[in-house]
Length: 95
Image (cartoon, rainbow, N blue to C red; front, side, top):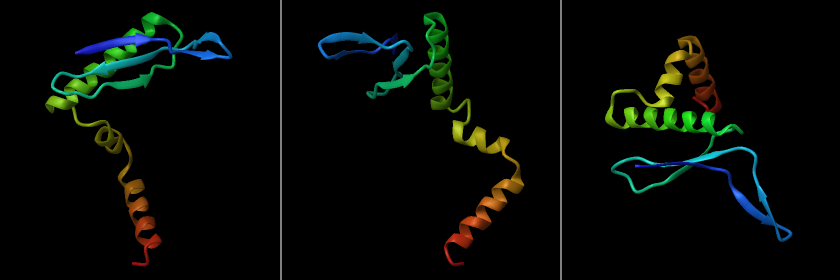
């Protein structure tokens, strides 16, 4: 498993610029895809904790212990809102 945090660097007009906020890069076991995500913080310890939390959540989702993020978010939404969205979707297509 790969789990690293870093601050992106780039050259601008021949001068090296380092961004203020951290990004995280991880790869879960059993996959070949490396995922790069923004952590939206300037503190290194907070960035490390956020990345560890994200990876822990993704690992639990991959083995089926935790439902995917979309399902957890949808379960927090009231059923009346889901029904209204469904009706407006049906009205958008002439049905």
